[in-house]
Image (tube, rainbow, N blue to C red; front, side, top):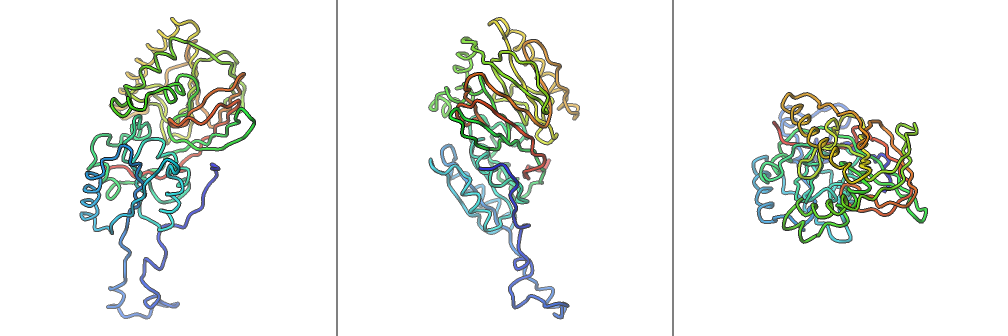
Length: 361
């Protein structure tokens, strides 16, 4: 799907706001004061898109009914993803009814599929995270284990806008595809985590299932030829083990890769890991520890955390555009979903493209 701007109707039609045609004024409102007081006001309704794989449906339906009743909303419309439909078409169908909010119950992949359709729309999205990584929810500070609070946010939260990232990828056979992502894209270690993790272990152990593929990737220590350009300026070419383009900075397991990254700062963050020999992972590990300290200190002080300067083993940069060509085709993932082997990539920040509804503080 193209990453361009979608144009959607404002929210609710005038017909819904002031009642049926028989009550609609023609020119000057000549109705009596009593008639004006009885103007019909539309009752809001939510649309809920569910990836049923990890959803606790009885508890979810109960929490939604309670929130609907407490807020005085109509019963929500429910949609369910399948193997062949990850959420994009369901989002388009849901938006046709002009819901007050679109609730996504699933992991980063389901959220990304819905966001590709929802981007540019004034309709807010609420996330009830049920995936393994839940990177966007984690970086937004959304409830990860409090279903009732996550559901309540859809009916009684506040809205904020976040950035998206468009990805233009050239596949091995020359085909060009365009996508969006919300959290991170990665080549190397990041893609190895996505493609080599055991599905059964992910269901049982969550993010711990990523440990074996991480260990195998580090021990193999394979590098690839990379030719990067940041904001259209060429950067030094040298072998890399991992490249990550981030709209946010906290990884699964609360590992802080880019402490200065934020989903609404109007910037892309790029990290390129170049350990060289196996011992080169030691300073990278130390950097991750320092990143965590810097990040948590900034959160406590309510100040944007600063980003550590680049080093020999870990290059970091910020910008609004990033491009990379590869000497050999490389496997790439977007928000945890493997796309394909690519020979070239181009990323562009799309500021303020998505409205997210989050819990009130």
